[in-house]
Each structure stands twice: as C-alpha cells, then as structure tokens.
Amino acid sequence: MKRDGHIHSPYCPHGTSDTFKQYIEKAIANCFTDITFTEHAPLPSSFIDPTPEQDSGMNPEFLMSYLEDLQSLQQQYVRDIRIHIGLEVDYIQGFEQETREFLDTYGHYLNDSILSVHFLSWQNTFECIDYSPESFINFSKKVGSVEQVYHLYYDTVLQSIQADLGKYKPKRIGHPSLVHKFQLAHKVKIDDSARIREVLDCMKLEGYELDVNSAGLSKAHCQEPYPPLAFIDYSKSIGLPAVFGSDAHSASDLHQHYHVIFPK
Image (cartoon, rainbow, N blue to C red; front, side, top):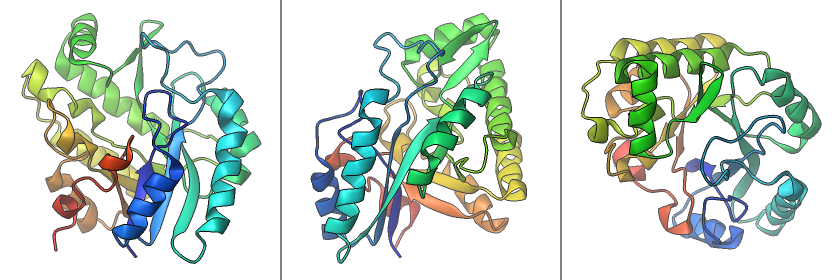
C-alpha cells in the first residue's frame, strides 16, 4: 500500500483552486493506492479565528458539498484508487464540547481524519502558531520565551490526545512538531526531544496514529518534516502506527518529499 493521508482541496480557503481530479489523477500516476482528503474543518461557531484573513477553516456552508463531491469521486475512481473522506479537525482548548457536537453530527461521513493543534491559548486570547514568523516571535515575547511557546504547544497536543471528543474523534494526530515551523527565523535553539518523545509515547499509549508530515521540508524557516526524521525512527521503534502526509494545498505539492521520509 502506498498512501498519502493528509491532502487539502479546492475547498481550502487559504489553498488553491486545483480540482479534486487534479490531485487524484496525480496520485494515480504516482502509483499511490490510498489517499485521504483532510480539508480544514469549519471552526467552532463561537471561536474567533485570530488570523488576519480569518481563513483557517472551511466555510461551513460548503461542508456538505465537500463531502458529497468526495462520495461521488470515490465511486468514479473505485477501480483506480481508494479515496478516503476526512477532515483536519482543530483541537482548540476550551472548545471541546462544540468540537464534539460537530463530530457527532458529521463524523459518520468520515473514515480517516486528523486532529491538529494550530491555535494556542494564552491569557484568554488565541494565537495561530504557524501563521507567520513575525506573529510567532511576537507571541513568544508575550508568553515569555520561545521555549515557553514550545512547552505550551506540546502541553496542548497532549490535551488533544486525551480529550473526549466522542466516538468520531480523529485517530491520527497531525504534524506534532508544527511549533518548529519558524525555528530558523527565531534562531533560538530549543532541545525539545523529551517533549516530542512524550507526545509520541502518549499517542502510542492511547492508540493513535502519527501524521508523518513532509510539508515542513518545504518551509523556508523549518527545513525538516513534522516530526523530524529521528523521531519518525523513534515512532517505529515503539510501534506507533505512522501515515505519510504531504499536507498538500496544491496538486504540485502532492506527495512532496515522499522519498525523503521513505527512502527506496
């Protein structure tokens, strides 16, 4: 089985207009047997997106169209490739009940989803940690240091793993070192090895999968996957199930760096 389990779509408000078929046809051409579309789920209605464009999640008005399009494409390509229907669901501290209600409503449409942390809570406000180097550095000053942001991030990822989000809670944890995205911009060297292992150990203990996310290799201020290669090896050593994810927001990014993660 050759699988890409983290793919976005034309429904992504901060992505591209590349069609589902462009992604699917490329996956077939590259001999992938399984792909999962994991569009950013609509954010909780009472949550205020802190990004300037407020485009972190899908418009809820389009959710059923997204699901119906994928159901149709599953049938259209049934002989060529297995297409899984998913969402990338945000874990947002304090919004667990709304997230659970959303999953209770729509979870039966999904068969392969991801739970990710993009937003960190600090003194009754939220910050999107992967928006820009400038916003990350400014947030680190508010929190006290880059190291404190790292700890806050890993604490929140651990909360996401342990949160009760109902029977449709995603079983895969997305890019669990996303806090590294701007590490070459802030230039503060943090040894977070113990925290990453703690997260991976918790995922294994609680029965989750790891999103082995190659997108960080294409980010100018990161230059490594999420998590770094050494921790992908660690995940194998503890028997943590791992699924490659290109986190593609365009067809051109589909399967990016696959052979770095899985060398021939």
